[in-house]
Image (cartoon, rainbow, N blue to C red):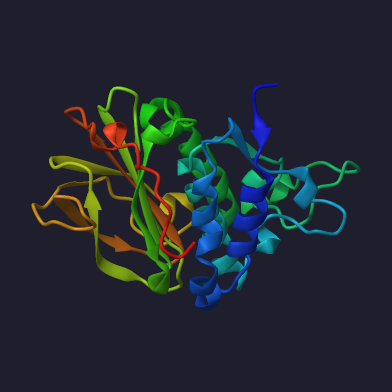
Length: 269
């Protein structure tokens, strides 16, 4: 009994993702506000049965737009959720992107996996779990504010949010960049906590997950270009409605670990 469901995170996040991307700039705080209290408890991030039954609709049906947009939004939601501090709880059927809300009177809609988009969502959840279990930056300090650092929490106009996660020894760093607009953002530059090589380990818009971005293993060296208050930066091509993860495992990084104000309030909260 050492965990607590973060219902505030669930309601805020689902409310944000239900909005048409053109309106999301006005609801940006719904994704950033939760980090003000994320480390006050050992939180579980639930997408629970409370929101998937009794006429509330399935998880994918809460997403806006046409079928393509709904699938892309759902993949982005999962990419955001798995990178976010806290343990994750996904209610059955969500990993299939099934259209019907869950019912105890029937099985899950396994037949939807015959469609590439739904099979891609299942493949994404499998990949998220695999990366999360092997990258200590995601889980070693998930209840510790010293393992988290905003990169940019305030780009509401472009619907882009970025942050970094750190392992206990500072060796592993994971950067999450979410482009939650419906617009491709080429050459989008973000600061990174250190130089050296960064590997793109996840892109929710990859063809492997039912998206349209070529599934290419991407590695790049950080540029000595100051950005977001950091000495190094990288430029990314961000597909619409996508989340990208970058991973670096080189020398220890203690910038965020030593900074008592690592988790600061975004300007728009």
